[in-house]
Length: 438
Image (cartoon, rainbow, N blue to C red; front, top):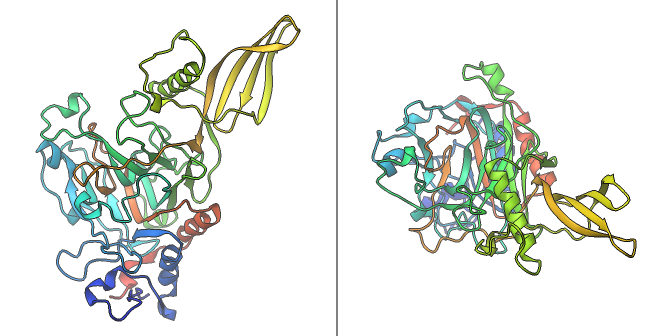
């Protein structure tokens, strides 16, 4: 097969810009790869697409992204080790730390290895200085985003790609001796599950830091579908059929953050609200509910930050189930789009039942309700990089391990039909890199 060469629409543009353009034609010999790339690049709203085949023509020959015409950069990826950068520990890294598979949905894939050395956390990145205020820097109000990653997951549940600098300011054993203490600089990112390993987990932030007075960011969705882990010693035949398409969409018009796996986004609910993170969500719901009532309620914290309340719309339940009923009391389960609430009603003198109290008993994780603006760093010194394979964080865990064969970012929430089309790419046989001609 032959690789598609990208050409500027206008011949007046310099040859130095050629690598940043859309494909405009393909030959019969390279239709397989050309069609796959075109499916991505011709999807409206594309900001950047790395297929790990496209590289700089000279110099370091770093991986570059396909970007729309007239874009000022094609976002070449640097190799870094964030433990060295923030703790001053460990060795420097290079592209040699990212083994190549030699094939993939688009002709190549990089390996994110499980690293036992705690001072070695390689990642690929576009530094903040090269992305600040570019189209990739999706932030602020009236902004939507989609991130799509074609991957084979081996283990781990952490970051795949996005702008998600978690900060290095948590006080814990892993931050002892740190040289650069930085507050969180989160915007948007796609993860391989987090609390639900193997799910498509979209993460988004309103403030760059934590949520609901908890130590971590909490605004995230989880697909119900799960990508199984692939053994590290999987055969070529096993790897060829192990590709998954992870995706997240945030639609600012509906305030919904959704996780998609292989083009599917089934509803997911969380009914266990006793874990630290989910207890923080429940408390954010309670504090907002109590604050809306007159007087100081039992359990209400008047110092709780109002911008951290979590109160999705609960005007009209989509379903009401009577859990128990006596002559003077009725208990109902009210299901809304994003929450399930247990309501206790008491009979009053008129014979009617009136609400006595209510409490949150379940939260919808897919989609997740996010009514905020995406965090806007004030300058390039307070924003995070765009990273692939890992994100900077205090815990320094090894994170996701596996193969990544493509990363695409869009500045709109793609439809289910568009995501299904993108997911269908990895249903085809992988393209061999050795058959791609320069």
